[in-house]
Image (cartoon, rainbow, N blue to C red; front, side, top):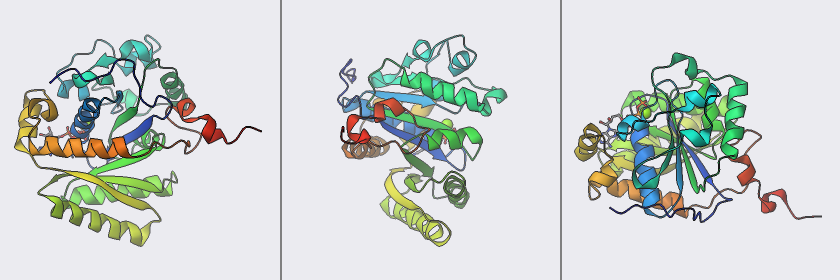
Length: 286
Ligand SMILES: Nc1ncnc2c1ncn2[C@@H]1O[C@H](COP(=O)(O)OP(=O)(O)OP(=O)(O)O)[C@@H](O)[C@H]1O
Ligand SMILES: [Mg+2]
């Protein structure tokens, strides 16, 4: 497949879409969803920036067979800028890689987080879609990175433990952080029927105990080709573009591309706050 990035030609530079991909339970497929979705969005000609925010156990670079010389750890120590650690992955996606096996990074200080947000805003990169792989669970970093995104995509599989943990994550984000809207991506479903049943199940529990809105963003079926691509450190969307999961990733990417970017920041803490703060969002000039 040809290189996909249209260099320097951001279509909607000021209206960057920011999605966090997160889950209650680990190992449900977040990193694969982030990387394949990013690739499918690049195929559509969008400029995609991926943040590996699983700061203690980051592994997008491993999934992609890349070997970054610098990671977010170097930035947080003040030894490199975000621009310097950026690497290019398949399809032209740009990636901010995380270190792996560093317990101290699993809990960033408030100052580090704010410095990081400010640094991102200053990146000299065209970005249409910014996707964050947050890591699993309800640790402070995960909640922070989710809160700073416009859309929180929760990944769950049909396994009961995954559903319970997805609910626990949504509960914490809604009760402690005031988040009211979530998107669900069902991974490893046998088909649409099972994906809908997972969605209904979670919606029923959320409706009973929380005041939130959950939307089904899409689903990705179980696919042996995806597992095979992982073993070869390649993306299924690149290696097996006709595989069933690749088709679903392209479908998800189409939905994201079509959905309007929010012009309004959700709160004070927000990725690309400045790019979101457009004249329209500020209201009519007096
Ligand atoms: N749709 C799928 N079909 C088949 N296998 C899958 C699918 N999605 C994920 N997997 C398998 O699950 C494994 C874990 O996926 P992944 O690393 O993306 O999960 P994760 O949620 O990012 O995990 P962690 O919480 O540890 O970061 C993959 O290596 C792959 O083998
Ligand atoms: Mg992961």
